[in-house]
Image 1 (cartoon, helix red, strand yellow):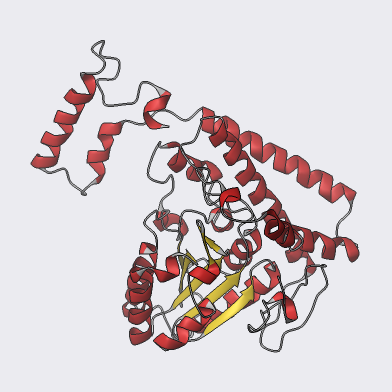
Image 2 (tube, helix red, strand yellow):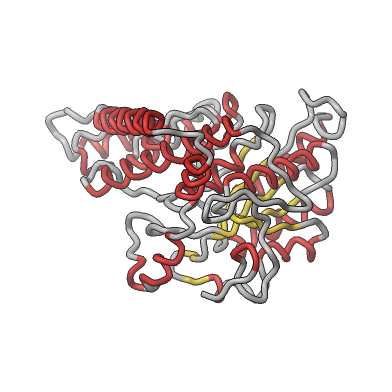
Length: 387
């Protein structure tokens, strides 16, 4: 792969980059990283722990404990950098892969695991953490985000000058989703109504098996111009740059400056999900090329070169990662089987007679497979029912 300045593909514009793949700090005329080295150490910790959660979840799926898992391997910098740029009052709309952003929001990884295990529809309250439930329908969350941002405007939470009140919305999606009608419709509404929405596009080069060159004839961030708002491309493997660019875009949105499209140029080093085999459609040489830009390795190189971490720090972090993995595994294996009939309880705020009748029918139908009565409550008596 031929590259231009800052690692951008030849013939395409430069990426915003503040930390090179070799771990050296660099400057950009429009964006600056304004935190100290302790924050960089914290970012590195976040990325290491997020990667360990991901690895443990993949292992659990391979062992039959999860139905599926969507890995974030290679996208840790994009997620941690952008996630740490969010204020508490901002609201986030994720896809199904934003495990690092969820970590930044303080969500226990077991709350993510429960969804992929089939125990529930998402184990956290969005209103408590300002982080919406995972969205499986590709691109649909961008419409949700735009509508929520319009509500913020009407509630007087944008452009007041009060840093404790002004808020923005951060919506995540991928390069494949950028071609969805929902995403483009959300762009139109955001542009027309000047909503406080930051669209964070993680361009990991592959929409399952469709490569980037089969998805768009122009860099994806340029699409924003056609809708009437700014777009910027950032090195998605540079956690410092992802933080700086997202922080600036969010502040512009809070101030009433409208939407921004951020294209985080990164790479999916793993499979699309655990049901995917990437060796069938991409070359190993491509993967090896991107391994040299590993987001964790470049931060570690910077911290090591500047004597900001030592063996004791790394040993403690390894121990913390081991403990976190043990927490994920033990918590997953101890999750109770779901009551499948409870699905009917969550359709409306109040149960309707029609739903009640359907729920009773389902209980009887389910019990007919278990005449002993062990599963008459509509629960799943065997693991394979939900996995």
